[in-house]
Length: 235
Image (cartoon, rainbow, N blue to C red; front, side, top):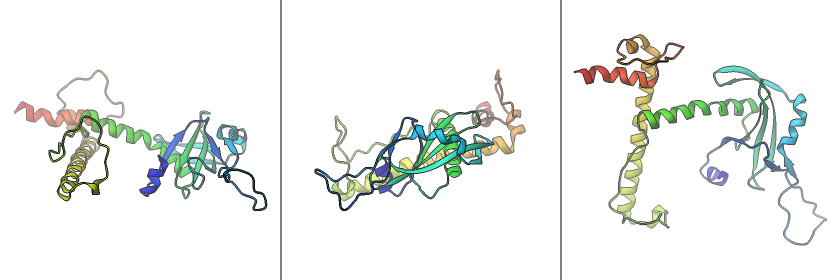
């Protein structure tokens, strides 16, 4: 998976299991040559064992899940998926004692930057949930009649292997996908802006009753959508 990210000049920040095993860089000795294939990997390292030094980890203030907290962290650069590429592991301990290990393919990022970036995962997941369940932002269906219907997954997915006319139609189809999703993202952003800037107007036109309402007083995207639809349906 990381290979495809690197081929497309992309970086990945993710969480790995505490049982993950990484590998130290291997330094060969020119005077020693053994039998068989040359060794590529260094010694294996159980990342969880490095938490034994957690008392000596530096601390930093990080904006995480809507609040600023003090976390203990330590960065290590090891091999994981490739003996030729290093990745950065960030061993992190949260204020409640929870421990997690983060991985970043971008070696230029600092530990606090990686932790803060991973904390954005919750906002991203909520946004995807609203796009899918509230607006149907990924419910696109654009069929391409130029290609024959196949009973199984196509064996050839290389675009230049198809005729030029088919390539153009495929690219137009991909562009339709992107426009469909982007328009729904814009709509979701407008609903969020209305909820933040005009909460009183949204509540005044809200046509339903909910047992529980947001404690902060701001309407959700769903409430804003219903408030906007109410005058249109009434007329």
